[in-house]
Structures are given as C-alpha cells and as structure tokens.
Length: 115
Image (cartoon, rainbow, N blue to C red):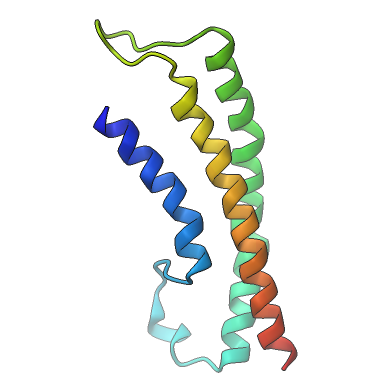
C-alpha cells in the first residue's frame, strides 16, 4: 500500500514543483544567465521536453487505466489491493496537471521574455 501512496504523491507533486519553479536543474550555466535567457531556456525546455513527453504518457496511460478498470484488476497477492485502476488513473491525471502547470509556466516565462 505504501508504494501506491508514494507513487501517487510523487506523480501529483510533479506539477506542483513545476508550478513553483522548484524542479531540479543543473545551475552551472543557468544561474549566470539573464532573466530573459532563463525564460527562453524554460520555454524551450517546455516545448521540447515537457509537453511531448507529457502528451505521450497521457495518451497511453488513459488506455492503461481504463483497461485496469474494465477488467476490475486486483493485486495478485492474497489480501492485496483491489481496484488498481485508481492508482493507474493517477498517471494520466498527473500528466494532465503537468501540461496545465507547464503551460502556465511557459506563459509566465513568455511574459518575462516580452519585457
């Protein structure tokens, strides 16, 4: 059970850390960039990495979660978890939230770029 809760916590925290700009990055060069260059790097990273990966994971994980729901998937262990579709449904939900947070993050960086 704790692995499922840890997974849910981690997946849902991805969009929160992106929204707060608290994600891990290598600051060797980034910290020395001007705010406009940082904004350009952030927008480019969103368009090239975050958006395509999030769309891909969302697209395939919806069917993954639906299949678990359709067959009423349960843990194979005796007394294991029932209704595994709930934890599998958190995967597309979390990446939809990443897309929303990333879009807001890119919009905020675009406004910095316009100044």
